[in-house]
Length: 336
Ligand code: TRP
Image 1 (tube, protein in one colour):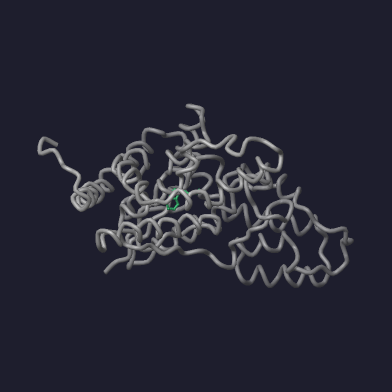
Image 2 (tube, rainbow, N blue to C red):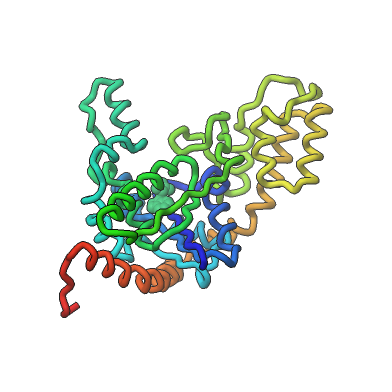
């Protein structure tokens, strides 16, 4: 039996290297495996919890689609779609919400951290929380459970969401029998904490990211901004405590890595080390970047690919949702 692998990205900002290393790359690696069937999507309705501008929503959704394809997603092989093109997800989301304890949502990280920061500054606890944000994990559970997913490759920050999906599926199954598969998550252990420009975790909310398809000149500028210590050019440096070295390891060959390690030990200037980092990163990203810009200039092609993908997706989701509805005793009109 093949394993169903599924993951999505919400269009809320430019995709950065942390997203790529922590979630996209491991997901694409799983697609190489002949024992898996893969479903990858643009989680546009998850994005709507944050993005309330028509233009931005359109642009960012295309960005995510083009990013997946530019980085090597094979849309003939995988099911590749826009979440909003698969209406069964939203119907299942309602059904699941009736099996999701409110207390479980109260404990979800994204919601909890807003409440906590509201508390700190003395605001009403629910300031800035829309119901989409509050029920975000339920929609995500619907994404996952509708495809009978076995494995969800995600960044560390999404683990709790997969656990919530498991809980909700469990609640449902307890009542009706084994209707839903219980999914597992897959995380990229060693590179789960890619450092950003300031050394903290690379994250949009810290504004310390390196967008993956940045133009070479800007990429170089960003790399030059990476925080380093005050050791002098000829002083030996510890590769393991350097952001530059951590990033370098993700893009260089093992020979190059050993080589740079040596140079750190014998004393390399930070400027020089940054140049080497730029060199490997740029070489690695050059081809996908070109493909990305090409795809971004053909939104029609992207639409076509995504709509084809939605047809493939719905061939799975329509019959399965039907099964779920029958299970709970919801009538299906014979005219549909
Ligand atoms: N919450 C994920 C993110 O923030 C996006 C997402 C939506 C997702 N639905 C999903 C990821 C289902 C994995 C499986 O990027």
